[in-house]
Image 1: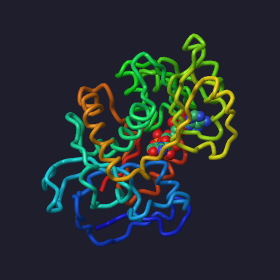
Image 2: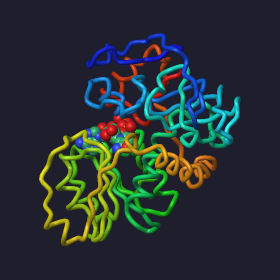
Image 3: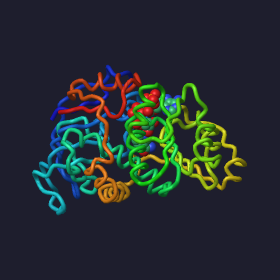
Image 4: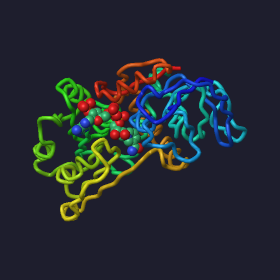
Length: 325
Ligand SMILES: NC(=O)c1ccc[n+]([C@@H]2O[C@H](COP(=O)([O-])OP(=O)(O)OC[C@H]3O[C@@H](n4cnc5c(N)ncnc54)[C@H](OP(=O)(O)O)[C@@H]3O)[C@@H](O)[C@H]2O)c1
C-alpha cells in the first residue's frame, strides 16, 4: 500500500509517500481501505519530531479516516467486509489501508458522504469527550471555546449550541469571527483586538464561563482562570501557546475551579472505544439531522500531504483539511 511517513524530523518537505506491506487485522481489529483522512495539529508536531506515536502505534501519520472494511479478525462480530465506516486512529490514516481496533470504528452518520466522514472522528471525539464527558457542560451553562473557526472549535460551537449552552468563542480575523457567529456562537471575540476575559464576563453578567475548551495552554492559563465561573472547568487540549506557565492557585481555589489537561491519542483502546460509542449515541444524531457538521476547508490527494501541512501551519484555513487516497 502507499502511505505517508516523515522521512526525518522537519518541515512539510520531509513527508514522503512510500510503499509498505498491507496491514493484517490483529485480534480485535479490522482493516479498512481508506477513502479519506484529515490533517490534525498533532500530525504537524509528529512530523517535526515533537510528538512521537504512542508505543505500538504506526509510524504512518493520521489520527482519523473513513473507508470501507476490507478484512475482519475472526473475533470481531460487529463489523463486516463492505461496511462503510469512519475511525479514530492512534496513527496510520495517511495510507491506502489501516488496521484499527474494532471499538474505534463508527458508522458513517446518515447524510454524510464518505470523504467528509474522514474529517469527523477526531473533532467529534475530542469535543464530546472533553466538553461533555470530562467537563460535563450542562444545558444553560456557558462554554468559552478558543479558536472557534478551527476544526475542533467549529464543531464545539455547534455541539454546545445544539445541546442548549451559551457559546463565547475567539478567532483571529473578521471573516473567521463571522463564520463563528454563523455556526451559532452567541459572542465572537477577536483574540487580536479584544480582551476575552472582559467579553466573557460581559456575556455572563459577570459570572464567567462554566467550561473553557483551550487550545493555547501556557499563554492563556492565567486569563482562562480569570474567565472561569465559580466551579468552572478549564480543559486544556492544546499547547499552541506553550506548555509551561504559572498557575495562580489562590484564584482557582476561590472559584473552586478545575484545570484539566487531556490527550485523546494516549488513551487506552478501551477508553477510545467508550468515547466512540458515546459519540455515536449522542453526537451522530445531531450530525445526521444537520445541527452539527464538520467544515471541510479543502481536500488534497494523499501525495500532496506536504501542501496540506503547509496550509494548516499557515493558519489560513477554517475547519478541516482532508486528504483522499
Ligand atoms: N488533546 C487532544 O486530544 C487534542 C485532540 C485534537 C486536537 N487537539 C488540539 O486542539 C487544537 C485545535 O486543533 P484543530 O484541529 O482545530 O486545529 P486548527 O484547525 O488548526 O485550529 C487551530 C486554531 O487555533 C486558533 N488560534 C491561533 N492562535 C490563537 C490565539 N492566540 N488565541 C486563540 N486561538 C488561536 C486558530 O484561530 P484562527 O484560525 O482564528 O487564527 C484556529 O482556530 C490544537 O492545538 C490541537 O493540537 C488536541
